[in-house]
Image 1: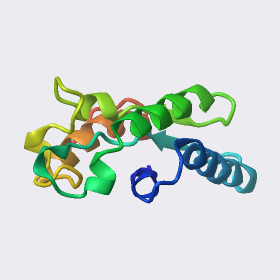
Image 2: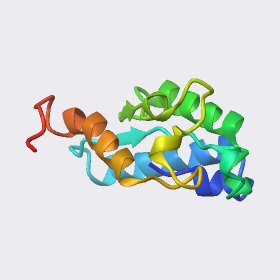
Image 3: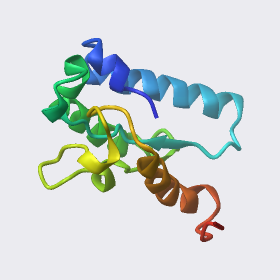
Image 4: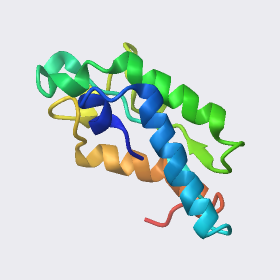
Length: 128
């Protein structure tokens, strides 16, 4: 999962996607049997008035995520949509998962683990 820092530096969504596809192609070329997962960029929340160069990229995040989903079959990776599980009703990063609108709190990492675990371990329930 990469991209929010690039978007925060005003790199275009198309360029972010292109770079992710280059990386995924390189991994597949060098290690064809590797199971590759590309995760969506997480939502952000501008209500904290911090990291404004990142938290103002709602439209761009959505665009990157949509394109990554569209390219999954062609580039032979599994797309994991984290975005929707981390969004509140206003499509912002849930306030209970962050202190600043960009970085995650511990509870968010536990949610992330619950989402990713079945992909990694073949749909087996996590052991606590």
